[in-house]
Length: 345
Image 1 (spheres, rainbow, N blue to C red):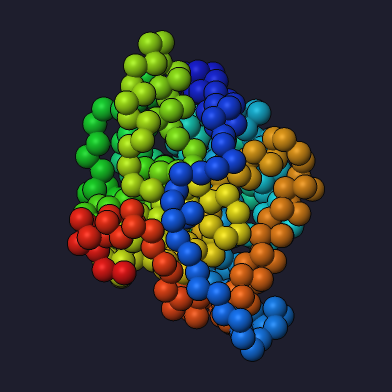
Image 2: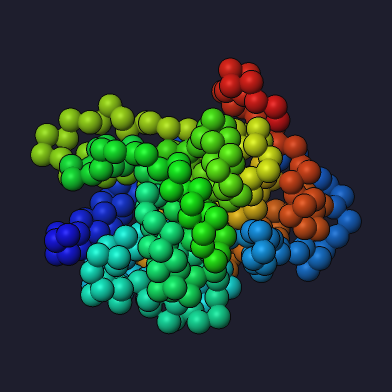
């Protein structure tokens, strides 16, 4: 593999993610409403934000989602994300480490995530279709607490140099059974339907990152890199994050991470109320880091935690289990989606 070409692509992805960033996501959280409780009979200090992802206990249900790595520039971003994770107590996921399996010189662009966050929760990341040995290697690279296996068919098909063969399910099952940490199967912005979720459950997957449509759009990014930019008809492909959360109700044995277009605290609270164990953001955090600095981004994420406590107080919820008992009001569009997909909420 040509490392310089790969590093250039990673830098392109970082620049284009910021280029196409919009403050208003299309993940449909605006089509959900809580019912306000005027007599919560509790204080903000009573709120407990602890959550669990399998054997992993997390102090807050917020994740710094996978972004980057593989070039000197992106290595600096990972170093900053490691420091931010340490300062906020949030788990953090790395971008795809697949390049580091090909060239040892790329490893140093990922390891700052752990070096600057020695006691935190770190998720390793690589594409589906790799072997158990390769999966364990990327885990060991970061002393990772979990592994994200990303599935990104739509991105690969639009990427000029992308893969065209997607026989992944058997290898996913082998990795789940063969590595030393929990394995999270992760989309990259196109969401998951119940058919996908059922297939994953059948091969032993217990954790999924739905990564719905509405945040960073890799069809848009990869199409921009094509000389003719001819695949824009796929820009709206996939299920939104909210639709994906509703789909996940049909496969209740899976633990869910909700990502894709999480722009602020209220989005996160709604995702948690819809059943997510953990809620992640990448684009909003990257935008803040690029446009401001580490200190400001750290303050933003600490405010998200305070914001969740405020929202849960408004609802009279002491913990996340109680928040999941809150029934959200759905827009007519989401009600129609549930009817057509025969989903119960």
